[in-house]
Length: 275
Image: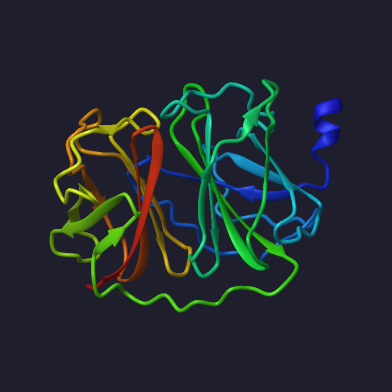
């Protein structure tokens, strides 16, 4: 009863079910929310999960601590308390700004009773999108998305397709190659990682969250969320490859995450996908 009472007034979100390697299309997007305003997705079904979010403070301030809490209810209305480990974590939380210029992949702590909690900061004001990916024990992968609003001025950088697909982290040079980019067709995304000093392939990559790497793809309108894992899950060569399908034409932001020398590597690319 105490746990049920604690969830009253939380922002409500009906989750779309999705395999990790497929897009989680979220229709009927609600307005950004802050605090305890309630929003509910349509297309409720017997297999769907209901996600709930809480922010403290209710209207977060940039560069100040914000506590995010998340929980999920099953089709029977009961709080989900048992979760399967997905790539070394029970829940992966992706935070992006509306213009997709900011990206953060974090992992809330679990209290064992159905509530995930994490403290984080946001770099600037305006709208953000939160994507929670998890797997109830005995069920499939679930992706929950919520829009939130911060006080202060928002960044508004135009999302323009990259003219070069070679990026530098300072210690690595990463070049993205791919097959033909067309909506609805599977393509191979390959990240060629070289040492910035020697220019030679970086053959000393380490597992990142239990895999050779992770790729997150979000459409420019935030309607499509895609999380794919490498074709060779445990491979440690210098060119991890991923199968991905872009469900619709448009502009997409792609983030590749890897590990080397005990530190994470994150690179991003903006791609134009055509019919």
